[in-house]
Structure formats: structure tokens, C-alpha cells
Length: 231
Length: 254
Image (tube, rainbow over all chains, first blue to last red; front, side, top):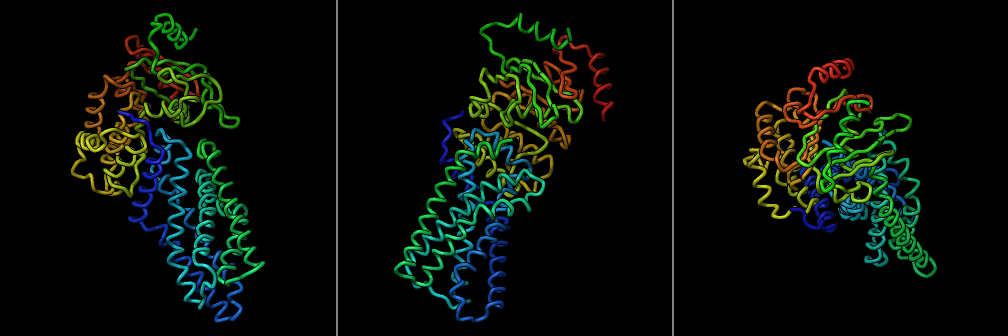
């Protein structure tokens, strides 16, 4: 009855299950979307049509995205905790890193969907444009999202079994994600402003940092997830 | 020599060297911080056996099941499941065990078929479509297969949980208070299912229902404060002694 268990199929099944549940409840994407929209409207009132806004555009965008992602990450294991499903998952012959990659991919997707919708709104709202390469801009966002969803999934697994999980995740997530925040701001801000020369080199350095950070934390998660999700 | 130790000695002497017990636990201890939840537990369960596990809340029953099913690691002691060490063969053991507990372990925002399909992928179940049809018919939920689990009654949810637990045809079934919250119809379906699979499975059942537990079991055990205070074969079961210990330890604590 039992065949050799396919890790790829298990990861795909976890992603599919999360997508179906999200399509039914819409609780993660909708709450993230409303939150980021609210933050952008608040920025609009705070900064108005300030001409120097483009200098801060990258930073403000990522502050909004980071807290939005945090909101979603806090919800990402809720379905798993409902009715003991996490125990059901752990009881199956699933390699623990496969659970991580499935959950991380789902989080990456939901965060990216919200960003795909809200980046154009941000641009229109603040009359911004991407002066540099759009492909580079998308790459910087994708790399930042990988970092956020990798660290976020790992740390939300840590916090899920604690009583103060809603409070604990921001406390442990924000300090660890600071390098991603800094690199995301430098890279996307620079690309939006269409920088050249030495400043463009800074953009590439920031993107290299994002790649290194993503690889490091994917390896950390792969190595530690068995321990993190266990007892 | 205690009754439990006598039984273990007897089992060891009578054991066919070729026969490996389905579950073998030796001097199992589990501590959480300074609290000792299980204290040098030892027992064996033969293939096809049915162990009914009684004890008050906090006796360590669920912890024992979690350790045997590889969900948590023991502090010390040795466990073998089908001759395999959970620390070294956890995936192989997990493929052989199923759990029916008072929590259904089902996703409320998925329907019955989606839940079974998800767990089928986790266990790589062969001929999954046929297996899902067969199980949903057995638990009489075929007509509700596309309804969200959230809309099910407690009894229906538990029946689906039974289908989930049997999906990968486990050889060892762990039942953690399986009758809890079931309506009489669900109890009938559950017991009929249990009868139909009884021969080819080994069972360990946690229950507070003495009549059901003793009727089903081949061995009965009472855990109290992490220790075995009663452990006997059903054929040799001293019912007065069982009831006396149960009244004294379990009822006394509740």
C-alpha cells in the first residue's frame, strides 16, 4: 500500500492545501492587502505630494511590506494548529524540511500576490515610476520575499507552540530580518530612482547580500527544521 | 515481584525467538523539565494484540503514545516498533501507524475528499481514488464528500477522522479516547469498522470507558503518575483487582 514517499509530491500537496484553504477563507491575503493599503493611505496623508518623497520611497515601501508580511506569517500555521492538524502532519512519513519548504512556498506566494497588487497602487498614489531596470526591480523584490518567507516560516514555527505566539513572532522576526530590510531598501530604492555608477554598484551589493542571506537561511531551515518543529 | 514484572518475565520465557513483538517498550522514561511523566515503563504487545490503557488525566498515557508514534523522543529507555528503533527509523514507523484521537486532525476548510487526498499524498497511498471511495463508503460519508469538514457534526468529523487514520492501511492503530463525543450511530460505525479490521491490526487504545476497554482488549494496563500499576492479559484478568486499583487511583483522582 505504501510506496516510496515523494518529497516533491508532499511539498506540492502542502502548497495546494494552503492555496485551497486560502481561497476559501481569504483571511491571509485579504487582511494583508487591507493592512498595506491602510499604511499607504497613512503615508499619503503624512507625506502629501512632497517632492523629496522619492528619496524615501524604497524605505517606506518595505516598512509597509515587512509588517504586512508579519501579519500573514502570524496566520500561516493557524490551519495547522486547528484540530491538531500539525500533529497529523508530523505523524505522516514526511521529512520535516518538506513541511518547511511547502509552508515557505505558500507564504512566499501569498506575500508576493499582495505585493503584485499593491506596488502599482503605491506607484500611482505617490506618482512614482521605476527609472531603472524593471527586471532588476522584480528580482530585488523576489529575493527579499524569499528571505522574509524563509525566516518568517522558520520563526513562526518556533512561535506556534508558545502561548504568546502573536507577540513572540515580531520580537524574534524583526531583529533577524533587519539585513533583508536594509538590502531591500537599498536595492529597490536605487532601482526606482534609476541610479548609476557607484550607487548602482551598491544596488548590486545589496542584491548579493540578499542572495547570500536567502541561501544561508534556507540551509539553516533545512538543517534545523526537524528540531524546530519537534518537541 | 510485582504483577507487571511477573507478566513480563513470563512473556520473555514463552517468547518464540522468531517472533518479534509489534510494540516493545523497556524502561521508558520521559521527563519534561523536572517533571517525570513516564517512569521506567516496560511492556510488550504482540502482533494483532489489543492493549487497553486506562489512567487518570496526567498519568502519561498520551505521552506514551506520542513517544511510540515518534512524535516526541524519550528521555531514556528503549522502544521497538515492529523491531525498529523510532530514533533511527522514524519515517518507516510513521508509515506503519495510524492515530485516531479526540482531535480529528482534519482541515476544517477542506472537504472530506480534499482532506483524504492531502493525507494520501503525505503517505503516497497507492490507488488513492479507489481507497478514498472505499473508506468514505465505509464511514458512510460518500454523500458528503464535497462538503467542508467545518459543516460536519462531531460524529461525522470523527468518522472522517477514522477514514483518515485508516487511509494508508496502518498495521498499528493508536486510539486516544476514540469514543469521546461520538453519537451512538458513530459509535456503531466505529465499532463495526474496528471489528472488520481487528484481525490484521495491532491496537493500543486509551480509554476511560472500562466496559468497552475491557471488552475489546487482549491486555489491560493502568498507568498512574507515569508508572504501570496494573498490567494483565485478558485471559488472566483479575477483574476485582483491576476495579479496585481503578477505583483507588483513577476515580480517586478525578
